[in-house]
Length: 301
Ligand SMILES: NC(=O)c1ccc[n+]([C@@H]2O[C@H](COP(=O)([O-])OP(=O)(O)OC[C@H]3O[C@@H](n4cnc5c(N)ncnc54)[C@H](O)[C@@H]3O)[C@@H](O)[C@H]2O)c1
Image (cartoon, rainbow, N blue to C red):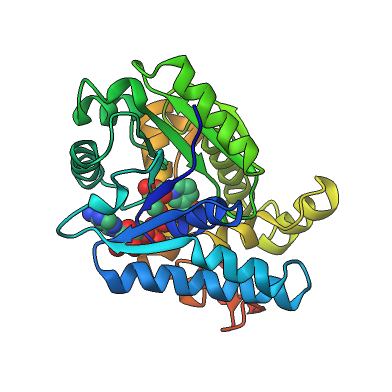
């Protein structure tokens, strides 16, 4: 099953980076969003990412130009015809079932029979999405859960739905390996593999702080100097999105009970608009260059 042309729907934080994974491996990649401006902004952000790599000598100017030329922005509002001849399309739009299923139904109608459709959802059942698309597409529908930042993080969870054929799962794993990823096959359960491990771990870190056992900074030191992590868990949480994490915690809590009980402190931060680095504050305070400048979170006082 040779795959040459790729598509990504949703040019936000994940979608643009997922498009970059395919584009930098030399593949033509359609990157769409509900407004052309959003798709172009997604591509523009990637230009910034690549310019830094060129400046650091990790990539040549020619490689950057070739990669950028591989990304074709499109507006999905009226038509998804730009995706018609893609071999694999990854949806990375809003985490809302109705939004995703509508995108997939439209792609199903517009694309060639052999196109494989994949969702980057963090929490929605892949089988439920596959069932909402069409009986004919279900064997060629699965989950591909990339990590943020997708162009750097190697792990991709590949999640077959009940009716996905093995040949499709294997073909997707193969193409992900070919573009430099480390795919891992997971069952279609809530949180898949990574989020179950990750949320369980950081919720225990939150409990350490809430119970007064350690400070935020000391928990981060435990991660760095005791566990060999490249950065502290609270710094990492701030660079993701606290609001998304709280949302996923609630889904995991509903599915698995107490071991995923959401953190009251994190909920308070989100309620106060402290979503992390992108809002300038979370567990830490951040400047516009992405450097920590202090700690003013309410519970740290
Ligand atoms: N942020 C993460 O760390 C992370 C990690 C893994 C998976 N995910 C999942 O990836 C998906 C995207 O997350 P994100 O963080 O990039 O979100 P985001 O809000 O940054 O981007 C979503 C993009 O989708 C676009 N969009 C919304 N409706 C659309 C539609 N109908 N058609 C086309 N585009 C549409 C939005 O305009 C936006 O640009 C979600 O399902 C999320 O759960 C996120």
